[in-house]
Length: 120
Image (cartoon, rainbow, N blue to C red; front, side, top):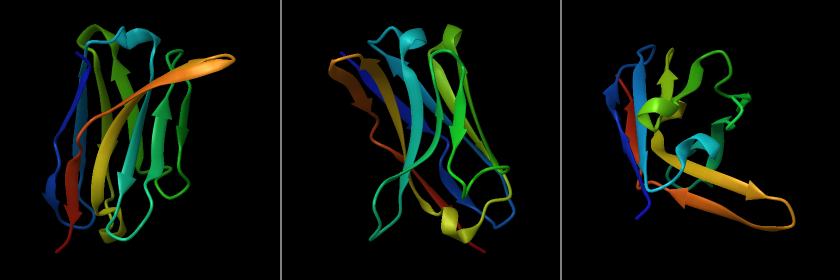
């Protein structure tokens, strides 16, 4: 069975840091693109950061320079290091594993999320 399990969320003060982890099982982790999404109450889910199987990285403009996505293929785990956190970063954070395939449906799996609250 495929499982993505996020951890590391919690309450942090503005300006603080937090590291989220996404532990994957049931997939060949190294060939999947890994993504972090977030969803705040009343808002659409947005892509925060992505790292491809080849190691290419993209960030949303809102987190660029503050967040760092990484992966450890030996541990089947993706990370999101968050620093200089702002109240507007408050959201549920979700891990996604994507295996894109040319000309056919992709495989996509989601974790259940971990909540991050940035508040003083």
